[in-house]
Image 1: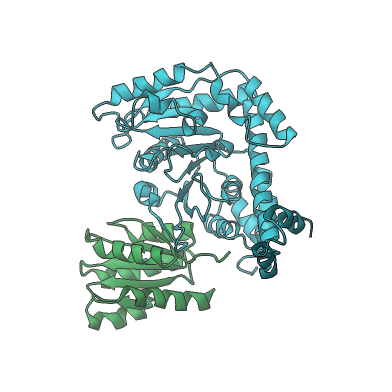
Image 2: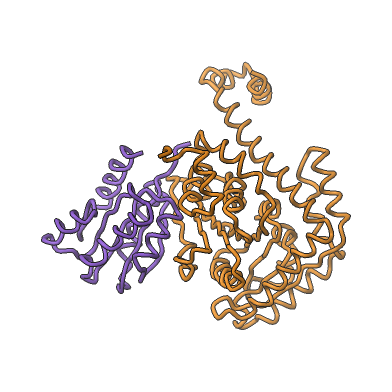
Length: 133
Length: 336
């Protein structure tokens, strides 16, 4: 049996706008992924622990509050601290283009802005994770 | 430095209590990786070391929230808790939305709690094929209690009774009258009934209806769960022995998981059932029955995969041409 790719979708920090995260969850489910969603207002520690216990292949972070430059790198740091060296981290939300290089440098492999097609996210994960496995 | 998935290293680290190792071991077991058998062989030695608490009931009854409350209770006693939460996999895409974890995020960073979400991956009945393997990993990790939450399927999820030591059936007011409660299925296999959301209108009536329906049966009738659906004589004998054990009459506990009301009482009943299992000898019979079920799961999967793997297009053409029939062909495939 093909093992499904496992992805954690998480919303760090103080941001209750979870429509986008839920749309991603649904799209990934329909594309054959096992998706874990931990809800809103998560600390980086909570996200890292969940990712470790669920042994996910990727963590998707959604944030619309503007605190991505603080929170995304912090999540990556906590993930690495939890021993998750290979977990792919990607992000989305309201994130200005000029912030993307800093996020990439911090270990966020890809940032998907508003208007991204769901298929391109599915394709990106499939391509990145098939190779890694 | 040992390889990432080296079984001996993983086993050592799981037995030391390392969550990251348990997490990886769970993946290998659930994905039926080639190294899974070596792991399972070792972890099986720990089987029976924890109280396995099954939580079943219809979707939205509050199983996850109630599970969260029970975790808090066990953590206040400093017990290590493992949690397996099964949610349905899509029959269309194979994907799954595993959303139970969200309800118990208050325990997210507690090092004494290990939570894992599982997709049902094609199995009906509220569980997943690899549930036993997953349980053994958590037993080897040193969990004193293992909570197993089933897919919320409701009426027919009886497999949990062959997996857990103590089965909770969670229902809510307005789920139907006593006629519903008299039906066969999940109602027959529960050891403790919970009327959750008991603060809602109709809570008292739901408790009374359940108690009324349960009182219609013979004392200890719930223990007769083992009889019937297994073929082999040895399994039937185990079932008969379990029936002969002294009676346990399932209590009905009203609770409000959201506020925590009734959870203390529920925990007491679960504890009492655990004591009943130990003292009556029923616990041993249940464990034996669980092992028989684990063997059945393994055989079903292995035999099916082996036989199906032998089916050729030529076979199917022969069926089309009526040169053979499914049972003759099936026999041949099993012998090959």
